[in-house]
Image 1 (cartoon, rainbow, N blue to C red):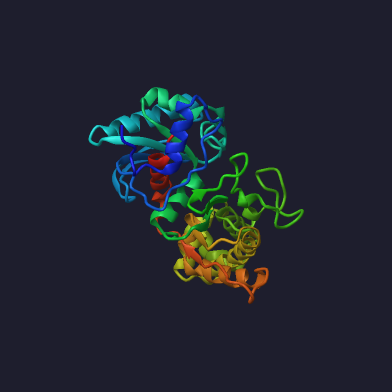
Image 2 (image 1 turned 120 degrees about the horizontal axis):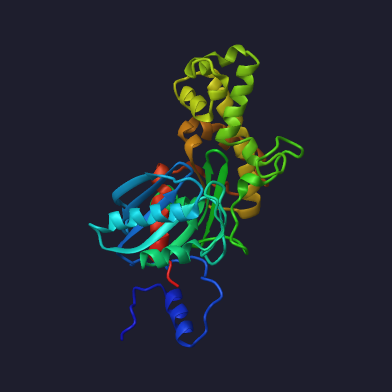
Length: 354
């Protein structure tokens, strides 16, 4: 049989190892060659705390069909059944090559087992093996931030960048690294937990157990917390926030403040600027360690747009090591929005051969 010249070289080496009886201990890091020609349709599945979104994605990152279901409780078997149902439904009208799963949590380096997922109760769960048995298809497994970063690198704001750091600003801060055309997942598979770098010693308590984590100062949760504190103190600047939630201070969220900032509310804009200061400081720390070619900012808080990015860039420039004597990585908004995780999971599956 002739070798397929379009298949990535790393895959031919891997297949050769199998023919020689040498079974690798773990799947290699995802690495794509300069010429990408692997065609076909994949299903990407993005599992969140409240919904499971699935879509058929082509080789150019276009979503051809999509379905959404509610995330079922905390039973791993129930989650698997929802995934199976979505795949079977979407496969009815499309010829599917593979299935990619993106979910919050830590995956082992082989991409087989979920070590921990905060909202799915997956603990050392062999998700890939379970789903391949149920679906009779090749399945890949990725952290949701990795999936989103991969989509931005391949089809979004980071297209053409060989070294990219993607930051997702939501409830917390997610992160991912793309280096020389591959996802960098670290020695144990859990790289990119940027939100839990301690940026203020003895600062706000974080859900992870530490104090002063970056996400306690530069996330949607941090934005909402600051606004709620002002509202509970009867600050005059909080009137618009309280009006938006019918006077219930506990209902003020980062999304509420972001929306009002975009409408021009001065107090909301000021809080967004404060978040940008913290974000820029953290990015400067990451630049000192990783020296990426670009930072891409996504997640719900990124909807503040330039209201967030302008103070972020200022703080980044002030705190960048060697500033003025070295190139500074541009900081750009993600281009694919909430669909990035789904698109990235599907594209990772297309090239994740074992």
